[in-house]
Length: 282
Image 1 (tube, rainbow, N blue to C red):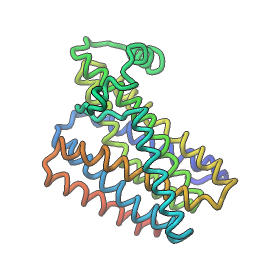
Image 2 (image 1 turned 120 degrees about the horizontal axis):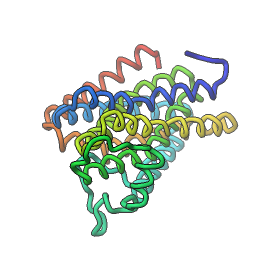
Image 3 (image 1 turned 60 degrees about the vertical axis):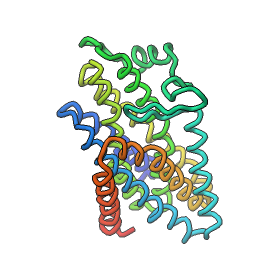
């Protein structure tokens, strides 16, 4: 639904995209997916993200402002996510990355105070059932924090796309919506498995996606003033998405799914972007 206020439209679209984590959480509430299914879904979202990045975002930036702007924007987005990942690691479900002798679970975000505050104050989790695995509980909460942080630059893609052309912003929002569904699954699944009430886990997954409008509105405000930076912003969003795809989505898909199902998921995700692009005419 379009309004006459561009920023309101950007907010609505990014909110819809962010609620993909809520859909993922609901899927886990209804029926917990197996690892192979999860790997297949991650393959689909990887195909969506990398195809969207190169076919649409970087390509549009290239056509609008030339290869220099597209290259600089893409590099800025990719390295931005790289350094963000150094200071605010995004744990993958069931995986610990070793970095300088510390695993990701204990790097930066592994603070008992932070976990307690997140659970009791910000998220208000009620332990209605007995927690059987506190490691999985911590994993789910850390994933929620990481996804919340990483959704902000993803929102920039929606804001930049809409600033370029409204239907382009709608196209990006739908693609990111699909991308966020497996992330919602990855957040809710370890929480429910640890013993957290299903609907509390669903609420955590939902909240983790609500940071999407923050990045979208920041991009909308900024690009409404500095219109000439729209091509750079499109390429920047492309760099962000490619880094997330290569650093998180494909490794997770390969870890949990068979390599053939992962490849099939990536192909299906790419086909989805082709079809969506044709339907929207972008």
